[in-house]
Image 1 (spheres, rainbow, N blue to C red):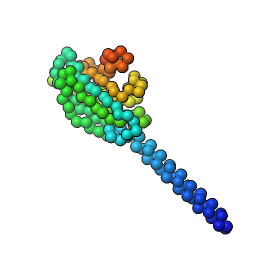
Image 2: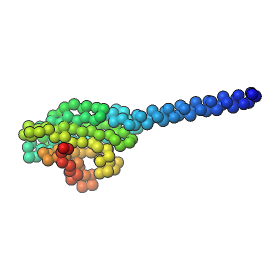
Image 3: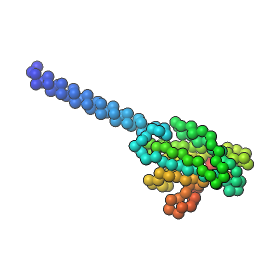
Image 4: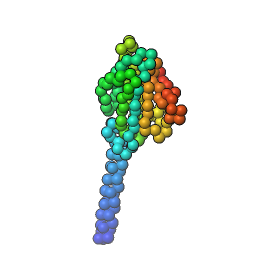
Amino acid sequence: MSSSTLLNLFSMSHKAQGLLQLVLVAFLLFLSCKTTNVRAWYFQPKTHVEIINGLDSDPSDLTLHCKSKDDDLGTHVVPYNSSYEIVFHPNLLCTTLFFCNFQWPKSQIDHFFNIFDCERDDKKCKKCKHYIWKISSTGACMKDNKTKDFTICYPWNK
């Protein structure tokens, strides 16, 4: 075998190693964007989800406990007409989901709602990075950026 043939084999091997490294980096990047971890995806702008206690028919404290697949944000008590905010980086695949349990003194049951569902919310408000929800005894209403009213309403999850 000539020295030029050996040199070509070495060069191809070196190119193959570079390609393998590139594939490995791409794979790790793909895995990192599948996570919904609050701190995981820094390339995306932060999303803010504001939750307002709007229990008009029963003005009392709202106790909420929000979670994602990866993060438990703990229990928080929100006084009437006050708010609590969640800030996170959604993943690029738009699978980020935060769900909350809501309780208040006169309610006999716990109420559940997906407070951020990337797939649902992105359809309602393209390019939004600040979602505002008002919680009432009948469910959750998102503020419409066009009308500035809480007109995008959903009942409690069953």
